[in-house]
Amino acid sequence: MLRPIRTLALAAAALALASACNSAAGANGSSSGTGAGATGGSVRGVSGTSIKVGGIVSMTSAGGYSKKDTDLGAKARYLRANAEGGVNGRKIDYTGAQDDGQDPAKNLAAARKLVQQDKVFAVSPMSSVTFSGADFLQQQRVPTFGWGTTPAFCGPTYIYGFNGCLVPTPGGTLNQTWPEGIGQVLGGAKGKSVAVIANDSDAGKFGVRTFSQGFASAGFTVSYAKASVPATAVPSDWSAYVKDLLSSNGGAAPDAVVSVMQTPNNIGLFTALKRAGYRGLLSDPTDYDPGLLAKDATRQALDGVYVLLQFQPFESADAKMAQFKADIKAASDGREVPLNMHMLTGYMSADLFLSIARKAGRELTAESFQAAAQGFSDTGTLVGDRAEPLGQKNSFGCGALVRLRNGAYEVAVPFTCLEPVPFT
Figure: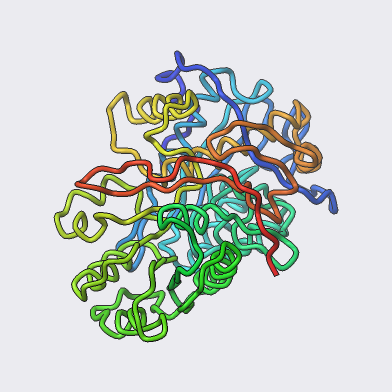
């Protein structure tokens, strides 16, 4: 477990404060055991001087993929908040992130531990494609913040995506950054085809459904849309998938192959497609990570790939991005560390929590937190304009595309915010 943030805050005391946080809706219940007044004592995780927060992150997984730096990003944001005096006079006591191993049973166990043993007020960040602890956290009225890539971030009143709901139910909306960005790269969507592939998991099935509709709404022909790749093990032979993809467009290859999977699946798939002679556009939403480029095989597999971002690229000159980089450096004991999207995920999850908690005032309870989330909004953050409870049904509609070229990322489509389209 990481050291509580309150013991680390002194190292970052010179940093400046920048706020923003997420929120929840749903003032539909009491806060039995979940809130606290100014004097603390009766509210889980809240004392007169601190707010206890924990995280759940897939630091390890059966496939080797790790989101461990999500924890560092959250720590960086909490450090800066504490250096500026905390939230309404209370410091953030960040207990660190529990590793769920990308395993449903471990995810639920981590949620139970944080609430029943560690007595946290909130869970932020939560970053895993397996969020089986969602029902428990909702029932316990625990404000929870993370990357809204699973259905649990779309509807439950105590659960918030740092960039909104990315897998909405019918009646919500779809973020069009990916299809519109790829359309821009290809010179328009008219007459172009796209194949969408994902893991055989709940997240993968939702991803295929939503992104297929988004690409169709943008004017693409969706020639292939399957959540067919095993979720528990990376295939050793991609030939069957490659054959299906390269014949999906009426017997021909599609103009673009979009993977809704994470590495190492993408490395295997993209390598196999390139070896089969595919020359179309390749894209995924997870491989914006300089750490992946250390190995020649990985760098070659990702060369030319367009990666979807739902935040300002690290290459941006935005002042808030400069602040993020400074905060990460401070949390890394002053060392320069390679940036990755997981750091941003943890950072912005923490940022949204802090923003809503600040609005809730000194009398912090589950009720006051939820009341603050109602009608919450701010503008110009690293994920664009935010609003709650809108974000529990819709994404915030912003994003960018970066491309890996000759071992370095470059901005292919600048960060912009687009009108979402209805999800049916």
